[in-house]
Length: 237
Image (cartoon, helix red, strand yellow):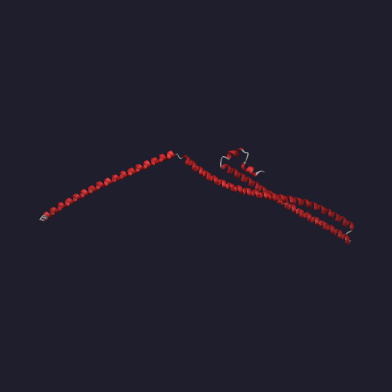
């Protein structure tokens, strides 16, 4: 099963259309990573099962080997018992022969278990290698996905800015600036007009105050002359 073929869905008509959109490769990559993680989970489960079978085969090998050695020791003990006379030669030979048959049988089982053990251990080694490579690929594609997502954000931001810039009409901008300039000129002229009116208002007030002051001074002079005349003071002498 080719994981990377599934990753990009090569051969599917939807993939050709999806390539034109930057978001779709992200979705495809995310789906591919999920598929690889599912394969990883399956591989880990298979590894555990094969390891269990390897352990079982090793124990069987050790058990059959131990039984084979035990039967051989029993055959030796039977023959020695015949030499000491505790067991007849015929009985010792018969039982020792049976023990040797059992020894041979257990040796065959031990050889079979050893072959299975080696086979399972080889499968374990292969599965561990595949799992290691699969983990490396998953880490690689997760990093690639992070980079791709970052590039999408940058490209979208750039696209939006460029789109806004492209939609700006230079003639409209110039026209808007002209209208703003006319508005400013109008406001400045209005401010100057109010200033002149204020200045005129101040000039009239000053003229009025000056005239009133002169009239008051003239009245004071006439009052002073009348007082001098009353007192008989003549400054002309």
